[in-house]
Length: 130
Image (cartoon, rainbow, N blue to C red; front, side):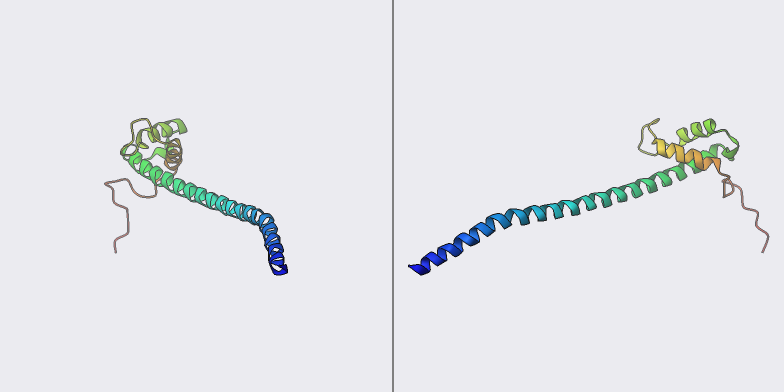
């Protein structure tokens, strides 16, 4: 009889320890998982921001090249005229007219303020003969 009483005492001790330790460990693991999930969300947000910046940069470059076909040297224009030029050319294929992204228009207008690095289309660069 004594053996079954001892077994029951061990069972009760294990049960009490399990009832206390189970939730404590579960809460601790839950916080650890939440902390890791927050880091993943922050990392993904950073990647999306980088992707968005790259997309704006590419679209602004396309806008500037297209706008320079209309006005070969837009650097001489004031900011409002460059903005209007950027509004006209920042609309990408598949977008509705007038719905170009403001970030793209701003970046395009900034690119148009810079002097062109390549000669305008149809003109050859003046290289010395080889």
